[in-house]
Image (cartoon, rainbow, N blue to C red; front, side, top):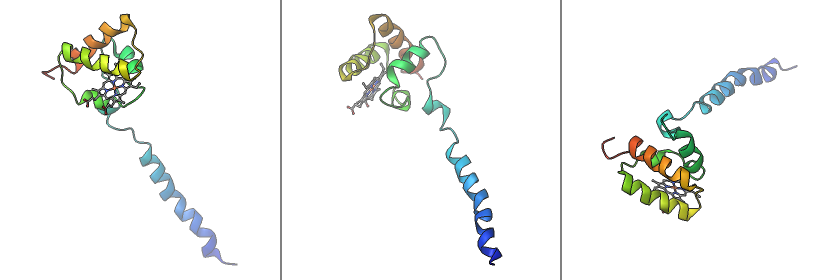
Length: 100
Ligand code: HEC
């Protein structure tokens, strides 16, 4: 009988649980999600499929430049309908405009 051998797993369990809880902490909200606003859901669907919002949030463009970016993304395979195009460009220019 070796009591110490049976105790070890019990001692290790809380440490494992703590590690798991830490791994589940959400990343910074600003980098993980688009801020609320008109068109947010549309942008989320069209633009978060291939890369995290952070790649978009790091840019500060006016509407013309965002339209260019959206054109480029459509070239890469982004699915943007004509109706969604204007909504997306307006959201991006408002949320990630030159002055933000
Ligand atoms: C089909 C996949 C796909 C979708 C959907 C997509 N992108 Fe991208 N995006 C990419 C790829 C791939 C890159 C990396 C391009 C590169 O390295 O040249 C990228 C890069 C970017 C960049 C960084 C460009 C730079 O110059 O650093 C921005 C900004 C961007 N995407 C915005 C958007 C926006 C806005 C949308 C929604 C309209 C979108 N993306 C949807 C594939 C996608």
